[in-house]
Image 1: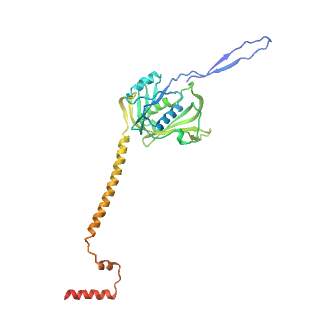
Image 2: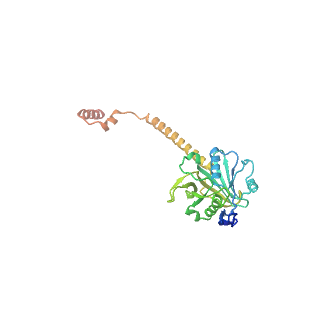
Length: 304
């Protein structure tokens, strides 16, 4: 990062009345050298929640640019041309399937690499009603979990997130303040994103939003395509998950039908059993003298 340069402006040492003026020092802002620009846009057909999430990401990144929605008929490699026209070397692209499955692409255009994620548990700034607040355009502190350094693909994702979400120093739209933290943590084979405001110097935090969970699908060598560098073995597509839920519901229905049919079969089988009052009374009835007399009479009747 460039250092601040001090420029001295020297005025006339003497004036008409003979009074000498002192030198004035003017501090000029440093040079903007990190030319990272991020294009944040989406395809047509996304839901309102996904659109609000995209706008929240644009708010968090003062070095981002926007673009009109991409037609769903176009191939994804067209995004590289859009980034070239917008003079952007990073891209965050939102894509929705079936009106309910949101996918997010992080790409380093035009040569890659790129990563595709399934976005889960989306909560935007508007719906959370959180008390935190931060200055728009301020620079964030990026906090990464220690698990990012354990595997190669997580280290690659960490570098991509650092280049995309870190605001360049001396960017014209950025503010010279650091008042919020972007947290990336790995739990349950997913990346959890949180945004916190730094309230006090002692480190107390308040969550601002947005919050979402990224489920990694694949890491590609190129930008929006190419050979696969890593494929998540724990990933389960939304279609397979919904199919499993429907299968479990159908199995529960079959179990209820089978249990009901078994009950009817038992009732039909019990209809043919003869009802003998003495078989039941022998269990709960106390033997009296009359019972003994009846039993003896039966024995004598059998002998005769």
